[in-house]
Image (tube, rainbow, N blue to C red; front, top):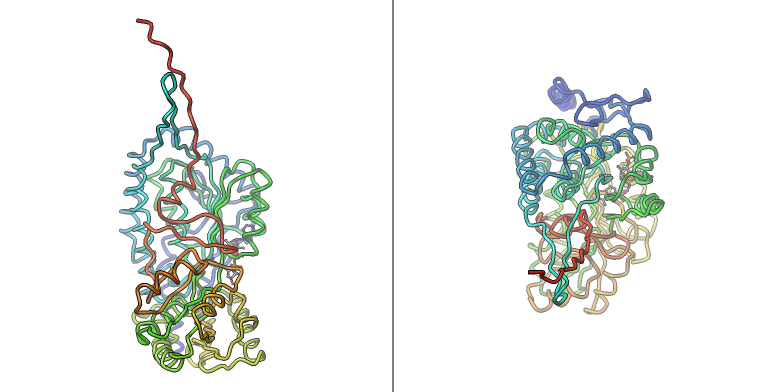
Length: 500
Ligand code: NDP
């Protein structure tokens, strides 16, 4: 069995890498950085190398920003929304022709189950398609100014934008960044995470004959090197980042050095409030999906189930039954529901939190281990549940970014809302109830940018996605994101008196 997993993955790695060379992508072509350093990306299910990618440094970021400005000044700035919409659609068509390849790359690079990888690749296409449509709605306002004056606003792109994405949703987040940025008329220099850069590089390669050279640039490298250089670059007019709160703060500082606006999509410690009238099986499934999808490596994971005492036992039974449907397996196999964690650091970190949970006096009632046998080569952590959790415990306060659920109780509406909001984060929140009025009231009282009722997901490109409090600034997705990539100019036009 072990050998069959290893063999299947080695074959798949050969398949996806034989005809593709993974390098940075600058000025419409494969680019070899000045320094002779590579980053190696690993398949987390079998901890085998997939590809060694030449790593960029600050000089290469300079080259990419220069190429992006050349493209902007030369031709991109003058493109019409209709032309940009048409190119975005052409790109989607090209990517669709490579759906299987992109899906397998994403699965191997992140360890996501193949069905989840496929759904996210399709979500990426849908996002680009949405921004291709939205592109043609960019407009401005006419301002009532009285006779003799014509006042109006223009929406203009920034020029070159810097974008940084994480390893947990590589291709999907790439399109959350590039879709609105390109639709708005900007060119981009984008840094993928060193732990999962392959689909970003491949997607850029597949844009080669579509966008003018220099419109899309992808600069793999480390955060401390490339990330810092990009956010602090005086030629980058706007910065958009998805990742940890800690790095988000540094990104803001880098952007502040040249007063570039930032969009930040950071982490969270999202609550799901289960009210006494909730449907246990529906809500148990929603909470399990919210913490175990993508092995819990999701910024909006429902990592705090906060359950009314009256439904506690019933909910817990239903939740555990749903949790059992998540079992560790080979990500390449259809039907697998849980893959490994994506990085070795993340594996160590999640295990450390599980130890902390055990020492803190909470009760580990499910999981907590790592599978042995054929999967023991990978960075797997079993679906895990802690009960008897206090709000001040570290497992209840810090983002674990893994398949670890904490369960707490509440006795009154006020206590539930207070407990849910007792966090510095505010990305998402969930509500389990059959009472529509209660759902609306709780949705208003919860301090979160996204609220799900009786469900986890979906994520629609039409709906703004982003957090309150320390979960971020601004929004990805929706019209809001397009607007973040545009700056507004007010024009006052003095109308001369008619002379004839
Ligand atoms: P990071 O925030 O470190 O990484 C996100 C991206 O930022 C990566 O591309 C990374 O590059 C880059 N980066 C790192 N340092 C800098 C820097 N100084 N300047 C600019 N960019 C930088 O997240 P991690 O990957 O380390 O994950 C750790 C924690 O972050 C997780 O446990 C989770 O809490 C949170 N997280 C949240 C995500 C979300 O979706 N909101 C996504 C990922 C993580 P590189 O990795 O190549 O060095």
